[in-house]
Length: 257
Image (tube, rainbow, N blue to C red; front, top):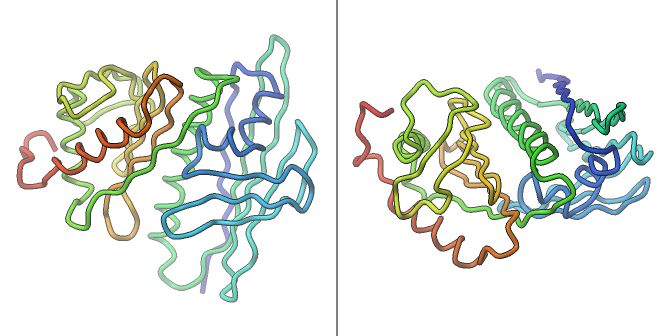
C-alpha cells in the first residue's frame, strides 16, 4: 500500500508577479524562504537542486511559463515515491498577486501516515514563510542559516525553551509579539507568524527565524533567513550554535511546556 496526495495552499501577497516569480524560480529567491541553499536552471528541463544535510534534493522543471506557471518534479524512485510542486501566479489590480501552490506525490509503504503528517506540516511552514517574505521583504534576498541540534536534543525541550525566551505561554497563536530575554538569542523582538506543535517561526526586522521538529528522530532544526546584509553570518551562526548547546530538557520547567 501507499498514498497518493495533493496538498493545496493559496494566498494573496502585496508583491508584483515578477517578484513572486523571482522568489519561486531562482536560487537566491528560494534561499529566502525554502530550506538549505538552492540552485535553479531557468528553463524547461532545468535542474532545481536544494542542498541539505542528507545530500541534494533534485527535481526537474516540467513546466516553465514566467511569470505565471512553474512546475518541477523529482524523479520517481523504484518504490514509486516522487514529489512535485506546481506554482500558479496571478497578478491583481493594485500590485498584488494571488499565489497558488499544489504539492503532490506518492508515499510508499503501510506506514506513510507519519511521514505525510510531517511533510504537510513542513510544506505549510514553507508556504507561510514564502508569504511572509513576499509581504515584508519583497525584492530582497536573504542568506540562509541552517543548524541542527545534537543527538540528545529533543524538540519538546527546545520548544519549551523557545516559549520561555519568547515571553509566551502555551497555547500560542500566530500574531503574538515576542521578546527574547536570553543573551544567546540574537533576535530580540518579533512577531510569531507560525505556531504549531512541530514548528515555531518568528519575523523580525532582520529576518525570518524558524524552529522545526525533525522527523522521525524528533530532533531540532533551525532554518533561518537573514535579510540584513550588515549581519555577520559567521558570528550569528556561532550565536545560534551556542543557543542550541544551552538547551537541555532537564533544565526546562514543566510549567512552560
